[in-house]
Length: 404
Image (cartoon, rainbow, N blue to C red; front, side, top):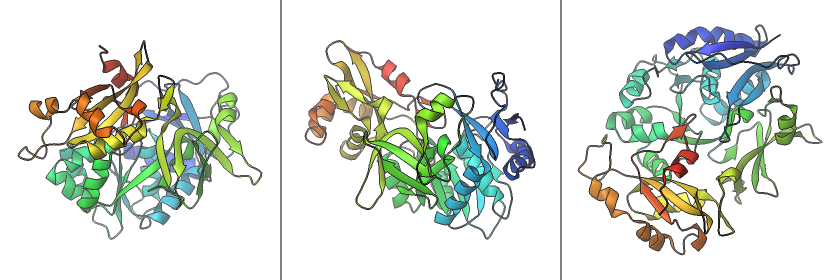
């Protein structure tokens, strides 16, 4: 069968696509190439889909963080193994709320997981006008009553917005589990969710692994993880994709099959396994900052900024070109709301924004991070520019700094 493009709307009209998606999964229909309704249909080069792998169900487009378009081939076995394993570590199949774009893997997996529950389809939040706390609360309130567990999958920016509003907090706490992935989750967000009694499950994975395959640092029952000699995270098991459509060279660069027949994907993420086998992701290889010949990973610096600088809610650390150092370490941060301001408030007060200086940051973090990792530039911002499903746009953040 040839690939069939399918437009996925951002509202309840999406449910019309559940049938074709189910047919792609059970093999009774063609494999699908999802794309966002309202955008141009994807164009395939001649013959790109002439030799498709057995059992192919979806080809999901992603550019990752490099901007290079990639089309990941996911089999029905990949997708169903991922969905079933997710339920194994949660509370079993249940009712799902879709609050993410359906053409990304995280949204597609919500639809697939819902198909394994008694409802057969998810409840759908209308994202036509973008994500809002009020819209999320309404969508959750409109979910059918069910004795089954209730779940939702979100990105960190969505969770942070909901935690800043009492109605959002109450709604999140009503779910049996709130999956959160696609980007690093700020320590403050994790801590606040825990303190408010919200069952936040951090997930790690990518399109090439059919979505999240590591939950709260531990691989799903069908997944494996190891760290290679270059500190790259390597993910293996039943959810690893068949490769990239029409690009055997890129497939060979990223995917391998070991002597036991286990398929592995080498991610661009760096990390380590602790003594309990729990995965800690420290950043991406393409985000490493080379300052004066010293390589600095942004992740530990971002974590230190949130942990040790009072009032810092979230941080993104990037490299900014510098004629002397090659790159300098630069930090963009958002601030927590101060007491006395409405919980759903937007901007930090101007005096709060002016209070944090790069000198204070450097003094506070000295001895906590290596000297080369101490930020030389600082911005306090209202929000970070993003790309994809909630990922900070590091290139845009780097370009926003004006070097003296």
